[in-house]
Length: 409
Image (cartoon, rainbow, N blue to C red; front, side, top):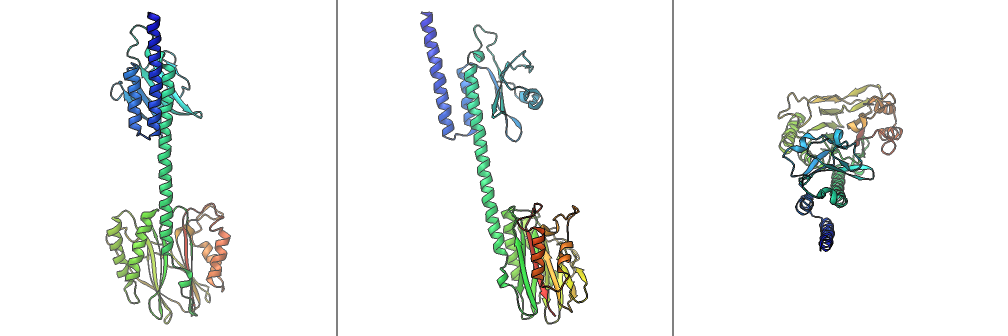
C-alpha cells in the first residue's frame, strides 16, 4: 500500500513538473513580461515544491537582484556578487565554501561559459523529517531556473536589438533631414566674380552641420556655416528650424549683430538651453569687395589673398547661439577684398582631425593647400584626398563640412 502511494506521489510530482515546464515554455513563447515569468517561477518553487526562500541575482549591465521571495527585505543588499558568488561555477551547498547566512544552496546559471545569474535558496523545511525539498527536486530547480534566466536574457537582448534598430533608423532619418539642409553645388554662385563650392561628408553618428550660400541681391551674397551641439534627430530638427529662420531673416541690408540676436532668441525658445549652435555668417558685396561677418563661437574661417600671400583667420567675436539668454557684445567685422582671394569655412569634423604629430590639424592643412593660384575647389579636393576623407581616415568621428569660395576682384 505504501509502495502504491509512493508511486502515485512520484507520478503526481512528475506530472506537475512536466506541466510546470510546459506552462513556463508557453509563457515564454507568448512573450509574457519578465515580472510574470518570475512570478510563475516563484510560485512553482515556493508554493508547489515547498521551498521557503529564493533570491535571484541576474546580470544585464550590472548585477542586480530581480527576485526576492521569502528572504528578509534588503537581504540582497548584503551580498556582493563579484566577491562572493562569481567564484562558483557549479552548484554549491552550505558548509561547502558557501558561507552566506540563511542560504543553503547556490545554483549558478551560465550560458556559453558566461555567468548569467545566481539562484540562492534557503529551505525552511530543513529541520523537518525526510529529504529536503531542495535536494529532492534539485535537477528540476536547476532546469527551470536555467530556462527562466535564459528566456529573460533573450528578452533583454531582443529589446536591446530593437532599441539599436530604432536608434539606427532615427540616425538615418536625421541624416536624411540633415542632407536636405545642404544646398547642391549646382545652385551655388558660379559667375566670373564669385565661385562657391560645398563639401559635405556626413558621419554615421549624425551631427548638426549646416552651411548655406544665399543670393541676397545683384551684388551681395550671404555665406554661413553652423554646427549644433549634440547628435541625432533632435539636432537635425533644431538645425532645420534654424535654417528656416535664417533664410527668412538674412537679407541684403539686415544688421548682422541684430540677426545674431534674433537667432539666439529662436534657439533659446526651441532648445531651452539644452543645445547651442556655433555659427559663422558673412555677407559679401562683389561690387565694393566688402566682406561683413560675425563669428559666433565657430571655427575661424580662413581667407587667403593670392596676390599679397596674406592669410587671415576670421576669429570668433562672440559666444555661440543659444549659450546665453542674451549675447553680449556682438560686433560686426568688415574685411576689404582687394585681390583675388579664397575663403574656406569649415566645421570641427575637419579641424579636430589628428595630424602626424598626434595634434589637431586646426587650419594647417587648409592653409597648406590653398596658398597657390589654383581654384579653391581643386585645393580642397586635393586636401580631402590627402586626408583620406571620407573613406580612408580612421580618426574621422564627425561630419566634415566645408564651404569654399573664390572671390575674384
